[in-house]
Length: 152
Image (tube, rainbow, N blue to C red; front, side, top):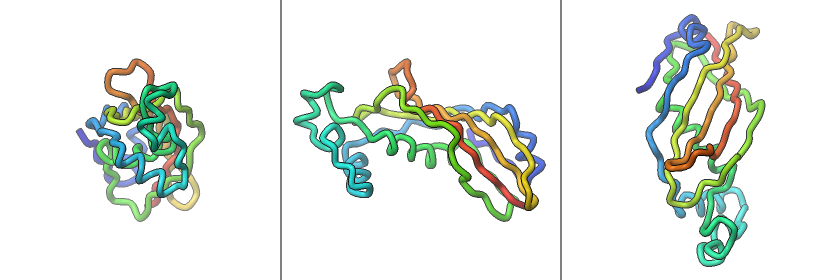
């Protein structure tokens, strides 16, 4: 279910809110290959299924940064910000990749609004804890604290 916030006051009110979990998204070999082409990272553990089958993960895995980039479409399922002039991704405070995402696995995003504070320029800054979960795995694929800014 998508949470919608209209304007800065409603964004401020989200502090401490668990936004829940997105739907599942399959990480296909095609997506991994496309990401490899876009970034120039063609390491065999990502793009060579035959060699990767003999490697430490028993098959190809998604790039860590691909896993992180999936936060964008998955987060859009969880939060819809309206009634602001501009929203920006201000950065990340911490990112870790505790376990790999095997090609063909499904991932989803869990998100919690840790804090919302005022910033100069008639805006607010949101700190969010993101966890990318892998279907059937006890360990997350990615944990990150993200910083977003929204301006009236």
